[in-house]
Image (cartoon, rainbow, N blue to C red; front, side, top):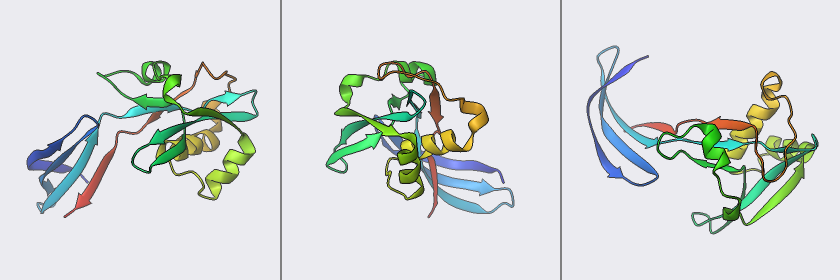
Length: 158
């Protein structure tokens, strides 16, 4: 079903995301309110060490007041490609590196123990698309397998 903006504005524009609000027309002619968070997107990788372990990073997040387990990566800057974003993500930003057996990560994923959406999406991609990812070895300074993280677009009816 296609929607067309009738009018919209940006009540908030920040460095990480913007809020677009307005009215859109549905295919059936109905007029609806839309509030959408727009984000430039980003990329993360699922690094595999010795075909047995994943490499995660722990990074402090002020929003939750503690470190969280994440995949290496970052947000897009100036129309970067996922490869460039991942290669330029700085290991110095991370509190520490965590090596976790693949089976333990699968267990944590299945039982809802990961809270970072990029970890959840990245691992689902890894486990659910075996023809795409062909396990590749890497070390803690080289991330050869970028997993594009979707452009964030949340639609809320008002």
